[in-house]
Length: 469
Image 1 (cartoon, helix red, strand yellow):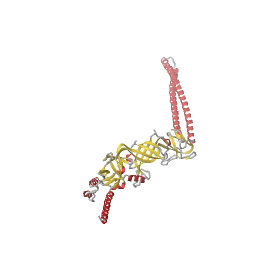
Image 2 (cartoon, one colour; image 1 turned 90 degrees about the horizontal axis):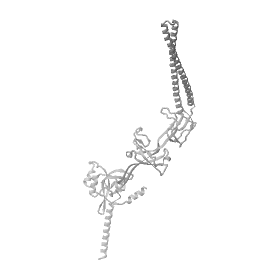
Image 3 (cartoon, rainbow, N blue to C red; image 1 turned 120 degrees about the vertical axis):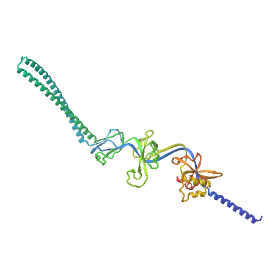
Image 4 (cartoon, rainbow, N blue to C red; image 1 turned 30 degrees about the vertical axis):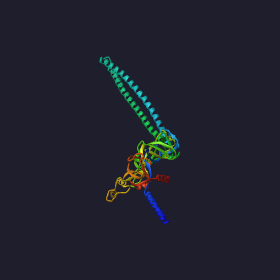
């Protein structure tokens, strides 16, 4: 064989190798690299978060109930007080003198009652004496009548006995009238005592208005006034002076705002973990005790029913989480501390889950046609997207990997989902444990179609994770 033929043979062989390598490279370039994951069974916890502040369940602003100067403040911020404890006093000379004066009036009226009772007893005794005398005069008169009838006494003696009897009868009536008068005077004196006692009660109330007392066991959280300042009471819609704020720290709540898209999942009694910005690393346990029914505008905090603007904006709902007293050290908490509540809305043990990002919306009929034609749309499938046809219905599903010999293809499978967690979602139907699904990346999933040749490349997901972090 000549040298020219050898050179020509080698050149042809090189061209053939180049053609084969180009074909292989071209075919490899048509295989889509995808990140994959598997449907697995695990515990799934769904949570939502809300931010707000620590608030006592019960708190009160102790306001001025009388006009005057503050004479004493017996507590300061941070003090603990008992129910009924005196916490502040205002100047009280006028009501105190009125109380003392009225007490003297009551004492005098009670003395009058005792005097009238003595007069009443005297009247009773006088009446009894008059009745006894009347009995004696009646006996004398009856005897005189018998003697006069038998002509044994003169008419003068008879008339004298009759007159004595009539005088005694009149005396009894007079003494009985005096007795009734004494009773009336005693009743009047007693009424005066009752009236004086009622007046004293009003005077004591006025004096009590100058004394501020704690309505319950509480923590003093704010004292905005000082001794010597003059305070006023509120009138109509004008707020009066506030002496101090008392908070019942026996029951502490976290009042947070939850986004309107999450509020439908919040129910009474759901457990929650509460973290406080001022106490890093500490988690307090609690449960939901109140779920607001009125939306609050995020920019102003006003309820939508109170807003006069028609502007659409994001809304929140108020949720109150009560901290559990057992297992929590609540002494470090103070009203107003910023807090975040993580509420557990669902807990599904040993359930089938997949990554949330694997879900896509597709036309199931078109995907089935693509799978049947290895990723190429048929004429009938193309007609479905014509302008004259209705827009196909999109359903939820995932792409699973199907092996065909040494090749892998993506196939769309509709799925039904349940509880949504932080990064996973529950699969109710459509998959079984161990199914390998396409999880990324987003650009690939957006255009991926059934029947597309794919290859595993989970380094994509690792690269995405490292870049996002």
